[in-house]
Length: 283
Image (cartoon, rainbow, N blue to C red; front, side, top):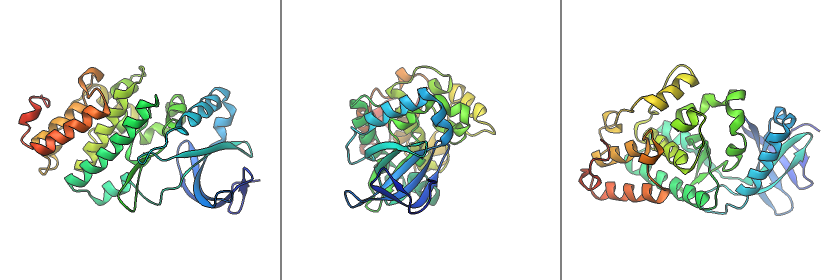
């Protein structure tokens, strides 16, 4: 049976409509008939089914992500296989992606508040040993009440080896940490770098580094320094400049040690926009 409206998956989900598609998966809105709720079903593209190592990583990481029950993380409920395609059932969030909200324009206060929520979700995941590895505005959903929810925890990690092979890096190179761009070991500071890029984009409307190819963007992530956000948006304070530039430090040891540290720096920047309390962080 093909993926189409009305198809029944896992003896409990009825497909309603396809709501999205990306480099790794198609996303369908579905009715969960067992529990009487709507869910998002994410179907991995068929080519991944041929890679046994990938499928095993996907199963393991989806299982880990299913343990992340938090207000700022999109919940993972179930997983299975349908017509040769592996799927996961996730919480359905009715709202917009952070990417959409950035394109419409955010105030500095709105941008910082959404980043705080993202960091709270990231902190929870890190505390449970899950690193995202592909944080970007497209992976943050904001519901009608303004609550930010990070999606694809674990799933992104499962597919990390496929990113450059499938070309899906085209949409994510701008958010990769320098160590990811170099193929080095990834840990919590890589996620915090990506959150720094998201904050930069939320404040300015653009990412720190752009180029014609993903490889050229990756080289900039490794070797170039970003412009302070205030040079793009004068509404950004000197203190917030310092926070962003620390998050975007090339050396992971020079970034925030944890999501909590990042959150505290945002609090300090809000209390003292001059940047005096942050010292020479930007330098």
